[in-house]
Image (cartoon, rainbow, N blue to C red; front, side, top):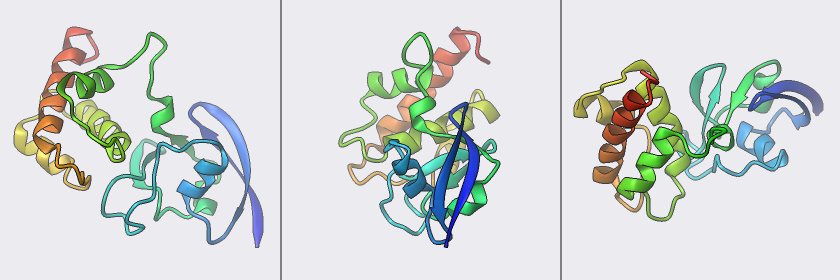
Length: 159
């Protein structure tokens, strides 16, 4: 069964024809957005992280009909008007990625972490990002990136 849903995607109103069985990642890919990637299909790896109504969700587990009327934000919205934001810049400067498959989820979760805790401890970082897995094992660099992003945000007056 197909239905039409309407939602806000990265600040723009969109509509999509979806089946009851489709997940959010499939809908985003239908919109030409491939930053959220389905990897485990169980909500365990964080590769499909998307922000829905201000909260991080697993796009592989979120059924498409449930986003009708929602505000959906993806990694594709992340770049600011002036270029990279502090989190993206920090991930680049610290080399907090290798293959890049998991990076969008880590970037979105790092933003949420720093919005909630502008100066997180290492324990805070590890706890908050525990739902994101990196097969390349860049975890030490990710922690460095979060710390650097916090400093860059503070310097820019974000926090």
